[in-house]
Figure 1 (cartoon, helix red, strand yellow):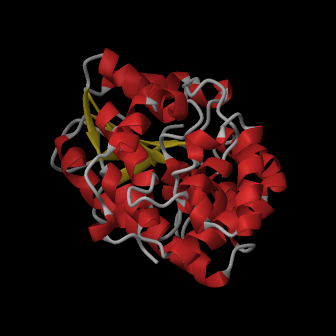
Figure 2: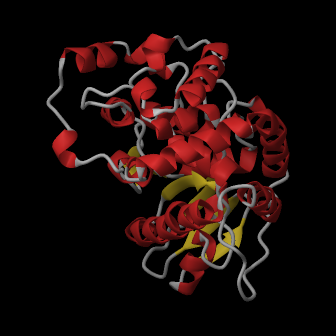
Length: 318
């Protein structure tokens, strides 16, 4: 069942130890868990009607309220140099904007909040929650990635699922984090379209049985994930949003239908609407470089279509 508020206790000694160990754990742990699971387990909204068949990653967005354009950039949670190295057109747009907006600002308080949300604080452990055979499989999979049992013993099933849904981190220099650090170094204003609490609630409020089922599915598909990630990366580098959708759709079809529908409704459609709505004041102000996961862009209920229907001028630049 979902974790109840009454089970949350004040920070105890073991929790303090987890915070102090943050640097050690975060080397293995994604800063953007929702985005990564989205890459592997969800699909951008099914194209309905005649949505624009977009091919691109960088879009200029103009508002009637501002003479200065803003830019919307589709990202991928990857440390591949081909992804993290911005093309000249994208770099120029980034440099021209005094503000950067991300899905979530990955600052220290957000990371600590994420780590605390990912772990049980009611005295339970992962081993107590999972069936014995599944726990052993999880233990073997995480130890193969260099994570000892002490590092993950308090994690919730959904948190382990996010870890196992991505390739092991080598540098930790993911695209979103590089954009954030570049913005801070340049003195740009930085905003988040969502809070860490909002992103993590999507997973943390799942029934515990659903978390366990998704973790089991993730382990079962683990051998296929490197291939899928390579395919997603190639589609991203080709700026092919429809190919990204097709790959994600094929992955989602392997999931249990009820859980697939839940992910589609909560991780894609609802978040698209929320982010598009929160972009509007920034777009009306002008001068913002907005970076969100590329799978949020296309489709009839994607962010590009939502902005166009709200009266914004949207054109592809790269």
